[in-house]
Length: 341
Image (cartoon, rainbow, N blue to C red; front, side, top):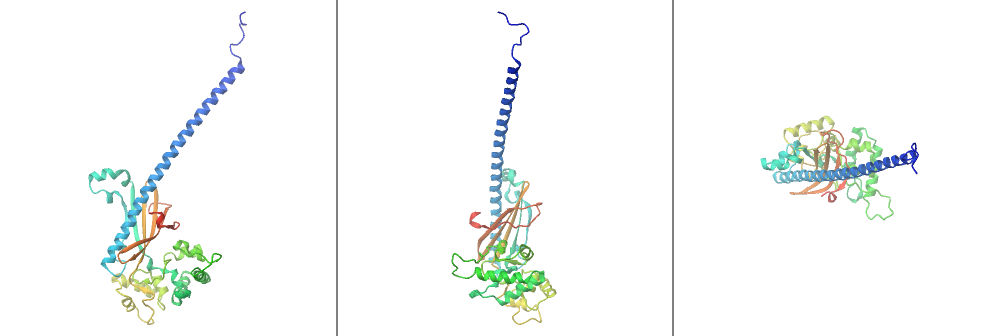
């Protein structure tokens, strides 16, 4: 029996189902392809980020070693520390290839990374700032000379002195020996970024940062590297104008000793400048390194202590720097040196 001449070869319902199935298959293939592409791109991005992180760590470790070498050489050359020495001269941003490429052959091998990387660095004398640890003397008692110095610093900067009293009290509590597990004493800071643990406000910490620091032991102020404001704070009877004159005098010729500095200022008490609070040499330094690689900028701050010609790293702090490549504000969280070496 022959089919009716007007009957369709395939029912319309079946044709619609076939078209829908084809569209679903195309969508599934497209989704799988997109997922595979995304996974491949993600693996490439992770690998590139890890490679860049390794390269950055390698270069910044080199910058730290550069700083330590300069400080060791300085210890061999002189027993005083001042701002005319090589360690105080900043390393301006330079292309990394200028350090690594000694000849044409080596230059061709380092072009991939070194031509895109720029390194800068500088060293700061941390003993050119008031040490918050100095507030508490031996026996867990308040150090009167340092207390008055910090009062003058707070007063000059317009900060609340009531906060200073609370910080000193919490510092004494943190240094109290033989605390039990249930003690509410605050933890001791391990760097200036953690002085908030002692009750100092963020505003005060930022305002004080150029003139103050936290070091693990009591330290004298280096008269050759301290700012005029730090000198005004630690030398009783010295006003800001006289402090600035002292800074100008040491620029012409640095102070060879504490007695040399004392002889430059007239009308002060006999113990206004003394070896207990002041010095002309330093042991604690901050080494700053900054690497600009492609579009990212990473900065590292390392606190080191120098004993003779040995320069030991206490803490290293590393973070991405916001803004343009010339930005130098380094305020990353404190990271133990052992975790970055």
